[in-house]
Each structure stands twice: as C-alpha cells, then as structure tokens.
Length: 324
Image 1 (cartoon, one colour):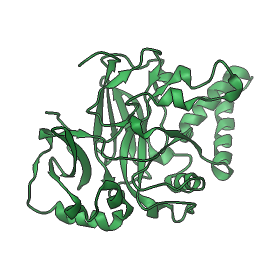
Image 2 (cartoon, helix red, strand yellow):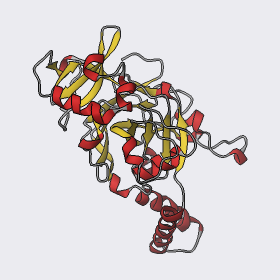
Image 3 (cartoon, one colour):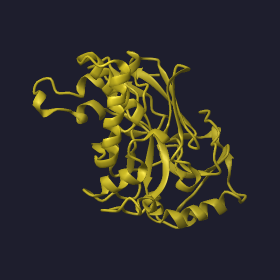
Image 4 (tube, helix red, strand yellow):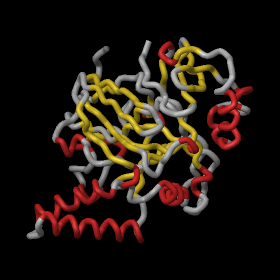
C-alpha cells in the first residue's frame, strides 16, 4: 500500500481506489472512512460542494464518531476532486515576476540590478493596483492523483514543475465581487501544474503568442491532491508552498506573496464564465521552477509538494511508455 503523510489538519475529504471503483472518503489524521450520499447529504461530491458550508459541519461531526474507519496507509488515494473546469493563473507571485522582469532589464538595458529590481517592483505595484489577473484554461482530463506516475512525453526534454495552491469552488460563482468571492470557496487542494517549456511560445507563428494547450495539457499534467481541505481550516493568506525534487528544495515561498489574492482571482475569473461547484482555480506558482534552475524533469525523478494544512503529494516521473 501507499504511505501517505498524515493530514496536518482536523479533517478533509479524499477519493480512494476500491478495486476497480473510486470511492469518496472522510480523512481524520491517519485514518479514513467511506462516505456516501447519506453522510454527505448530497448525491455526489460536486453537489456536496455546492452547499459546502453546511456540508462541512456534517463532516466535522462525522469525524468525531466511531464507524468503519481504517488506516489511511491501507488505501490508495487519487485526485480528491472531479472538476468540470480548470482555470490556471500566470505570473502571480510578486517576487517571482520581479526577478523575471529584472533579469530581462539588466540583460537589455544599462540599469544596475538594484535599479532593475526597483523598476520591476514599481511595475508590479501598478499592476496589482490597476491591472487584471492573467488566466488560461486546462483540461479536466489532466487532473490525476499522485497514484498515477507522471509520464514524460518524448517530444521534449524540458518538462517543468509548478506547485500551486488550488481553490476548489463551492457555490456557483458568476460575476461576483471581490467582497463576496470567498463565499464561493469550498476548500483547497494541491496541484502541480506541469509545463513543457519549449512549447509555450509558437515558433511557426510568433504573432499568435503562447500555446497553453500543447505546453500544459498532456496526460497527467495536473497531479492533484491528495486531500480536499475545508476552506475554514486553511490560512490561504499565508500558506507555505514548498516543492522538493529528489529531496532537494526547489520552491519555497508563501501565498502572502500573491500579486492578486484569491478574492481578486475569483472575481475576475467569474466575470467571463460561471465557476461551478468542484471547479479548480489555480493561483500561480512561486519562484524555483526548473527553468530557473536549468534542471528539468527526468525519468526516475520524485517530486514532493507540500502546502501548509493540505498535506503533501509525491509524484514519480517515468519516461512515457515505460512501466514502473
């Protein structure tokens, strides 16, 4: 069986494999129990999330009862959500973007590194004050659990990691204000938003710009979970985001550095299309991607991604077409 890090929160939901089926379970510490429509008070997970504030109260009470609990290590967890839509946010960690802009300025102007950083910081402050978040969309079919090895496609050698805090939408959000946005958050989970760097920009027609479909939507490119934690149990304003590659820390930051916070992201995203119960809204990735380190994913690599209050996921990389 798989060894899962103990959930560092009171309780959460997870989905686990039971033979050929996937079942929904309630996790408390190092144990899990199945939950069905009667316990959920809803026919399925997304219906539960549509009224999550009342639903989490039921789960909190259930977590304190006796029942068919079993050790968490006896089950194989998979992705804890079933989104119909996945929205991804780009360039949303302030210090990360400042470093990127400053690097470009020092390479192409006579500014000193200090001058370039100050100029870039002013740009980010202006963007936060009067700009808009940058969104693109991912395919829900790419959402998998860390029980699925990450198969690295052979058409590139520059597949990269991007660990992110992901918002799980509760009540449908359509054209909501920043002030009301958090009423539509059911919970949070971990997502590693894998990106193939040499496919981000079109080489055959540069005027088109970015190609997020090809660069981000190969099978399994959104490892998610393992837990879905209630919004009220997570400090989303200052959650530590940390990724290790083969035991070496590559990303280590806090959501306190988000350029656009979660209410701003939900409000902006909901202006175009309703966000539905169970949908994922990724909040962006901090500095420390493979592009920074000039080190990309290889066959045999192991990524461990952890976010405060959400546990940890362990993603194993394999060359596409190989069995492990």
